[in-house]
Length: 224
Image (cartoon, rainbow, N blue to C red):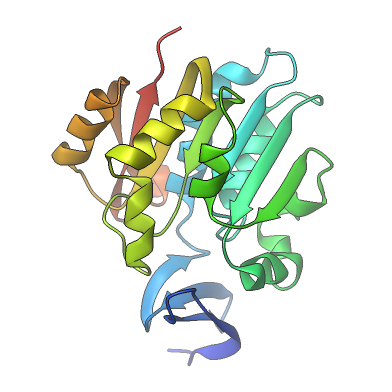
């Protein structure tokens, strides 16, 4: 087996170590020494975009917010679904992740940051939600490991009652909140309903039809 090659590293705001590594043709981002994401398993990230944004193909000037850039696969799939007049804002907490996507990770998803419809804002997506009342047609959260925070306990605030209330307020009537999760979470479904959403949980595979680990996409619709 090929050894890991360290390409770059950074620290999260709470001091956790995050590394960009490569093993053969596979890129892996490690958080605290554990695999957070891999370039070989991004089907569920693409499914997040497909489930949330397919209906926006015919919308005029749709606005989408993505929380977490990752390796760019969610952003690429979102852009591929949207019309030319769309706007996609990506809130990414770590400047290093943006640099990695403009560098070695860029070709993996065909350089989505070069698309004129995409704009990256460095900062906490929770802050963006609180400052954007009724702005977005879709909000996609692909932060950490989903409702069960993995790399940073601070991310849990996105998925508690206050965080979901902010997401609800940031959506236009009829908008959808789509949340990527590493696992099923019945308590999170209940919190979404308590926040006023109509909820559906969609099971997906990390490699879609090719299998891989099972993940869950939560689709939460704001009433029109």
